[in-house]
Structure formats: C-alpha cells, structure tokens
Image: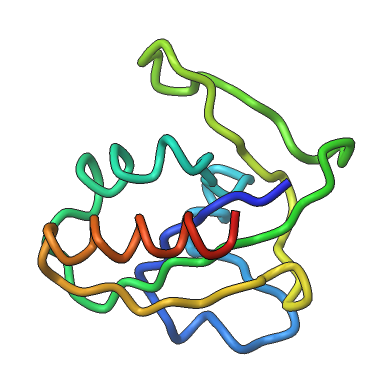
Length: 114
C-alpha cells in the first residue's frame, strides 16, 4: 500500500530507518492516503518551508499499520507503529513553501506514482 508522510526535518532522512521526532511521544508515524494529503498539508504544514514529501510502501497486512481516528475528525488515518526502512521510501520530494505550488506537486506525484 502506498501512503504519504510529510517530513518537516530532512536531517532525519538518508539513514537506514526514518523515525520522526513525534514517534518518541506518540509511538507511531502519521501517514495519509492520497485523498487525505491536501487536507493534512492544509491543517498542519501550510506555508512552512523545508518540507519533504515521502511516498512510502507498507504491506496492507503489516500488523504495525493501523487505521485510526485519533483526533476524532470522523476520518481514519494510517498510523505506522514502527520506523520506516529506507527501502520502503519510494520517493522523497522537497515541497515548495507556497500552497498553490504544493497542490500542483501533489497532483503530479499522485498521477505519476499511484
């Protein structure tokens, strides 16, 4: 299953495994499905600089992948209760700091890779 993650600290990339800082407190990695990506960007990352979009591959039957509504927004989001191995990262794309450009980049990526 191909899922997305927005990385706000590119210094964490390029290692054998990727673990965002939030993993320490939440014990999972926030992911999203393609149709959820724009909403996640708008809610949490709009107009931030230095963002990297990751496209990751996680097996659907992976026991560490859960779909949950942690914030009670009425929508299930994928959460991965493990680090992401470098080989699971299919794409790393630096995102623009302008929302309009990010929307275009998201459209291109979803068309090209999904």
